[in-house]
Length: 462
Image 1: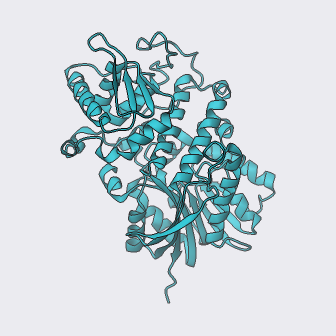
Image 2: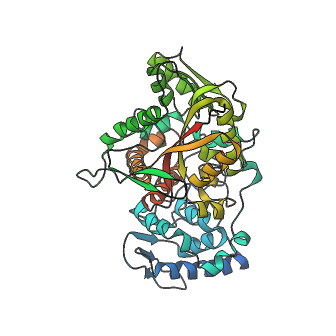
Image 3: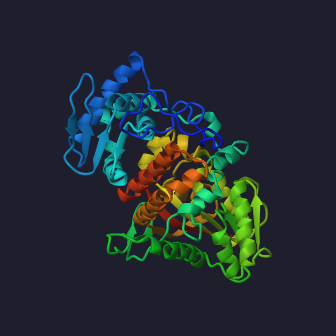
């Protein structure tokens, strides 16, 4: 498994594959295992040629511009119908990585500097909008033979899930504080917006339309904290948290939601598997004066005990793994009193894409969230109806708001890159984090993925 960079390592060293006029990221095998190795051999050459053909054919119908640098055997070439620009500095490496490792290779080629895009999110959003059809339909039937399956050690068993969580959330509290707003909310904000109502296969729901545009075409950084306030308070409102409410929070974050629930007079048990999050959450709870109302525990959700009036969980289900969604919902069910409510904010994907990709090992799994996978609203509704007494009611989707949240995080992170480096992270980490934030933003901007606040009520049996 490729781990986060070892902060004790020496300064970045140049790699043989680095372009002489580009700053080469540190691709030393000790810090980023395997990233300095470009696939070679007959199989890699054949896969590279096929990847080039598929990529070239796809670009003929996409509103992007891709500039391929000249190689020893090919002249420079410009592809696409015009739009956000990507420059491929090392085409042979680019296609070798994609041919051998698909979208993982595509992301790794960015980490090594084989390609660049000034408007990375804009470029990726065009690709995300066509994701289901980038590969020709006949070849998609061979998907199971080509794509890598998630490694067994990424499966979120009770023995392994803490390590998967630590991979991301124990990176550094200081690093997260550099780009998050003062609430330390690492989830989508809800900006000021109009709402529409609709009905789909799951039932009625509301949609928060694109955020109100500012002078620069989108929300400004000053709008982010109020957006997080609005998101958190709404979730507390729709679940009825108030004086005397007993609350279980699955996934503490850095304690903001628990603090707000306590401020309303609730008593809160909030759980996490990140020791770094637990430490800072406890400090923030104490500073807010609610240590007598909030208990921050280091425990797996499957091991929780007691009964509660409300269960809250913000963007934690994505880390559960599809094999355990039923267990997650059953845990909520047994933790709630009859008539109790569960408020979950969840990143979701369309049901058909979820079914098609649930056994796929992705770049995000490898570098960011081991064992993670996005559910569909439909599968959560079906599992809760079939295996629990929970019934889905209120639903608000707000994917475009996540796109703006991620844009502001990325801009803030980029502006504090020197402080990130001072914490011991390297240039490759900077590229990785930028790609992660913009890759995610593209998915929301293209409506390929969504984020929902979902409210279940536990049925009262007579």
